[in-house]
Image: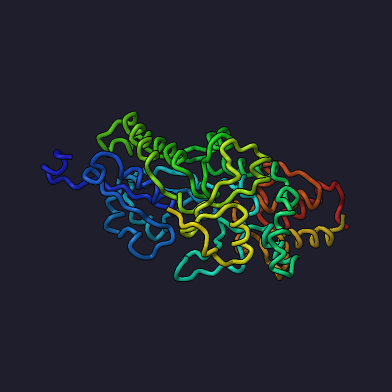
Length: 301
Length: 84
């Protein structure tokens, strides 16, 4: 750190491009000793038009680009109009888009969902949309009868969840082809034993740690810092143990899905945090069906 | 299975998966034309198609499905029948 500052040499620039997962990854990197004294770290939010979009001046100096590879977006997240500013010797480290729908096989766009001031993504954004609930709303006219109707049905009757799991994993492995980070095998081997996702796109700290360790294992990234990859792995461990990133937005898991896949960590009495409140599974379904937050639900910490 | 039957079945699947009640299926319809049809909902689509038509697609076949016509042709092939 002192070497850099004393010589007045400009710091190398690391840009992370993606969505909230990349933001979390950069939080982990910033936790390294003197990270921001050694490296300029910038977040390029895929949807942002404002501050979370690095200027051409920053991109022209980019040493390492860590980029989420979205296959439905040309395997990239950085806008082409921004990419043109990158120097030719900039190293790109590709991270696969994280989508693990196995535990939420019925996610759907809820036509009622509209963004508002209190919840910019709406009360029921895609990640917690539920095709079974939408079917119940359509089939059962009396709102008072919908909760019972929902609980009588099972997602297992609506979809072949084993086949869905096979294809979800196939797609996960496919997305990782050509990426520098690979976590699909870890997810496949461990999702029954440990919680790896809060929603189908939001990983738990365990998975974030695994991603961070692999990113840091890339020599272009490790060379930016003064921490060895072995020390960094331990530091990412500590960061993961203390972070609450994504913990405030949890998509409830249907008990039938949990039973079907034998989730060892699943607690049927668990409460899920959403929009600042905690819901049991049944309370969540009631909230979902009514599209009205339960004002009596406990406030999430 | 007649092509009309396949289209009718597919229309029901698309309505279920994308919630698009008025979506008109044409041979050239692709992910570019349908809001929400991405690599993730593609899985929903395949699982629903397999269930509806009682068939199983291979991984490579799934990756090559780009348009409604691709899907129809694959269903025809899987059904082992000539189009009438």
